[in-house]
Image 1 (cartoon, helix red, strand yellow):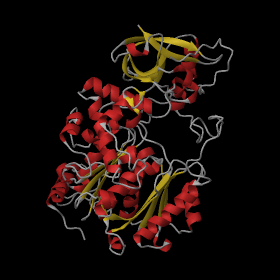
Image 2: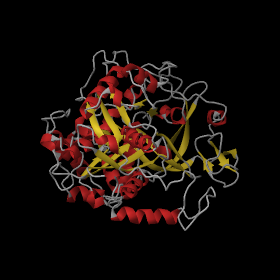
Image 3: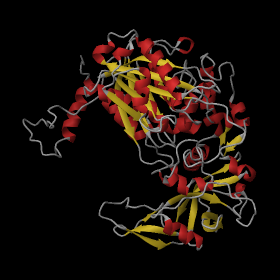
Length: 143
Length: 438
């Protein structure tokens, strides 16, 4: 599974998010080990990933809110071959779509478990990997 | 000119009902809606035809080739195939390619020495080839131009051993820098390439419906049989069995190596012209009878469903425009980057019920000489995926079959073909109905 321990001396060579003005609050919260989502004022629905506009209507507004970090595995795959060269040392690892309790889907990794034990419907909770001084990635582990 | 068929007349009545409330307040007279353009709802049916094909035999690598040069060579091949000259071409559609980060169409037009009334770039991933045919037909039907060349090509130079490097100008994919939400929220988790995405689709499908690994493998085996009758296919002369597929290495569960396309170099091109000019071409015209398109997402994460795809919207629109039924189709030319892509497309295009794709594969012979000829050229799985020319190969093969030029893999006297192009991870979908008669 992906080893995102920033304390290792080797430079982090994997792609890192490049936050922008709209997405910065998401990454700031992740750094504090909190998961935040934008929420539609009009419909109450949650949005992932962060956007400049609501996908639910032109007269809608979005506001940041902290969410539970709980969800279920909607689908997953065990990468037996690396999906990119920077992950070569990590096979087998799990890439998954997690369905958050609040509704949105996100693509992430399932970590801290045997890849063979991952199942669709499995309950998972967010875990935070500090991969660089600026960036913390949001992964999930069995709940 | 067009002789209306019975189902077409019925469709016209339906359209009249649907357009009962014109949105822009155009006055109705005698119960017939007329739009501001003065005509009835535009249909592409039979307005344009494919009359020329160009295609390079796929190869693993190119040596010192430029994409521009390959696009130009395959354009010449297609124009000559139609029996036309450069001066006959007044429209050009090209893919977006890295050598020309800006103004790709004018770059190609200049290189070829054309004078174009219509210049366009199509950027629909694997659906680009089918999308080009749709757009060429649209431009011709609208009277903007008469003869359009549609070009796709992929060079593939051996890479240096130092591995991929990211620079501001190339990004991880070796193309232009990607600053999309995909790059920000998915790539950092190793969600790179397409294997992982199609694997998650297959995994979810197997959770929701009955589908076995053997049934998926059968798709790859049938297409390899077809490729063994196509000397231009990458895997010509290399038959495989279901056991071979299941014993090939697992790449991303549940997809095995032999269920995944092999990237190659190659090129493919079409000449699309008006119904009038088609009669002057050297090849028998293959008419574009129906076309439909649907796109809802770029990343599979945000797809409305992993198992119900946008193929449905594209295919339904294409069948409706063509006025033909699923059972009238003689050849299915369906985008096949993975076996699961074919299975879901067969269902969403309406050839099998949702959840019955596995049973469909068991109950039909998908070989070119079987009862449901699928991807007679071998599909990209066995012909090779030359970038966007791989998607175009589903259009060229359907046209080649309908022209009766497919030699050792010729389906017996086909009249109608269904083509589907699929971009990204079940993202962009373009369906076409092609036919020998207009």
